[in-house]
Image (cartoon, rainbow, N blue to C red):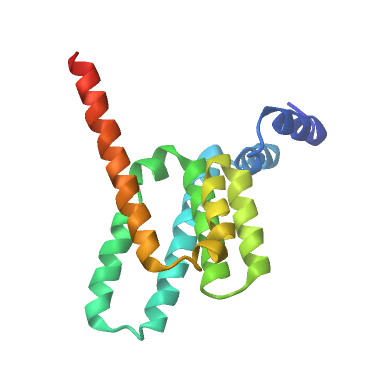
Amino acid sequence: NMSLSQFIIYNFSESPDFIFRYLLYLGASLGIRVHIIFFLVTFITIYLVMRVYEDFLNQLKYNKKYILLLILIFILSFSYQDIISGFRYALGASLTFYGIYFGLIRKQSIKAIIFISLGVFTHFSVLLFALLYFIYPLVNRIPILITKIFLILSFLFILILHVTFIHFIDL
């Protein structure tokens, strides 16, 4: 029952991720059932990820030994529970993923920034992935050996915290 200006003011005061809510508002204003909006969001989410995989398959020229691997990666890359119950996050993550693909693989920075921004404004928690995209040029200059060392150290810290937490619970 809100006007568009009331809706925008409410959403900006509530949280920075407003695109999904705006789609729901637009659907309600146009008399579109919420199930159709959910279907469209799920379709867009899957479509964006499939477009990236299709482009990779085209670059591989459909080499048969990679197709099975890519199909397996594709199937395992979705959390189907998130697609069904976490529409907003799945849409935000797929928009961000699509933007990162445009930026890093296709070298189209403007499209990358647009899709990443849409992803962040859909679900604010994908901001971490957006930040990773923007610091990638700095991280890419670090030698691979140092990167591997940091990765191993991060796993060790996780292991230490896990063992400490289990020991604390046993006390």
